Figure 1: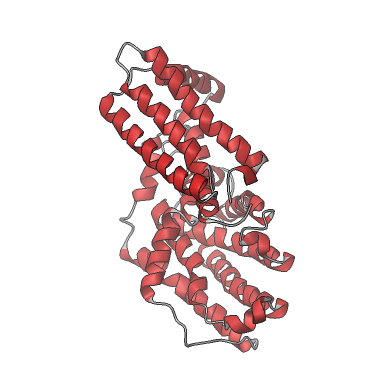
Figure 2 (figure 1 turned 90 degrees about the vertical axis):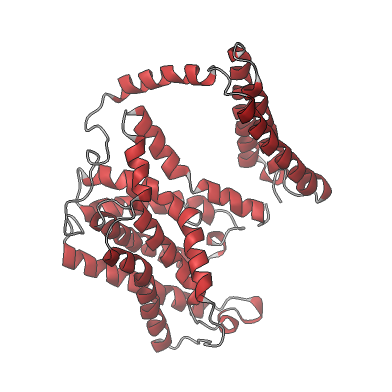
Length: 362
C-alpha cells in the first residue's frame, strides 16, 4: 500500500481508537459520558495555563535548536514559515493530528491510574501504552514512523515518555482540561515546522545523513526530558500539580461497579436501539445525500482514477442507513436489519483493509 491522502485519513481515523474505547467502557460501567466529554470543552482554566499551552512548545523548540547549533548542526534561517502555518497546524493537530487521542489517554486512562498510582507512575504507564498503540505505524513502511531508522524510533519512544509527563502536568494542573492538553500536544507536534535545520544538509541528494538526523532527534528529545525532570522536581511525583489530580469519581465514573451486571444491562439496550422506530424521512434523506456524494467520489477515485475504493463501502453503508430511516414507523424489523447490514458493510471493509489493503487503497 502506497502513501496517499486516503491512507493518511484512515490513520487519522485510527487516532480516535482510544476515546472510542474509553466511551464504550464508560457507557458499559454506567459512568457519565457527558461529564467525560465535557473535559474536551473545558476552556476556563485561567490565562496562565493557556499561555503555557501555546508558548511552551516554542521554548522547547528554542532549547532544541540551541543544542543543535552548539553541537555543530547546520541551519538555514532563510526559509521560516508563516506564523499562520503554526496556527493551522495546531488546530489540525488538536482535532486530527494526535490531539484526538487525548480524550482516551489523558481524559480516561490517566485519572483511573491516578486513583491507585502516583502521577509520575501513571504517566509512565500511559506513555508505554501510548507508544505501543503507535506500533503499527512503525511496521508500515509508507508512514513517517516506518521510514525512520531504529535509532530515531528509540528516541521517539523516549520523547513519548517525557511528553506523557508533560501532558499529565497540564491535565492535572488545569483540573482535567483535555482541551488544554490537546492544544499543548498539537503545539509540540507542530514545532518541527519551525526547526531551522538545513534540509539540504540533512537530506543531501535525497539521501538522509544518518549523523545529522540522529543529532536533530537527540537535541529535540533532550529539552522534553529536561522539562519533564524539572516538572517532577518542582511539583513532586505524586500529583505533578499544585492541586489534587482528577480521579474516576470526579469524572462521574463509579468507583467499584459490578461491570458484568452493568454490561449485561447495557447489552439488553442494543436490540432496542437497533430495532427502534425509523427516525423519519428527513434523516433518511440526509444519509441518502451523503451516500450519493460518497458514490460519486468513488466513481472518480475508484473507477476513473483506479485508486481508492473506500468511498464505495462508505456510500453503501450510508445508503442502507438512509433507506432504513425512511421506512414507515411500523417497519422496525426491516429498519433494524438494514442497520445491521450497513454496519456489517463497514466491518467487511475493515476486514479487507486488514488482510489485503492493496485491493482497497492506493
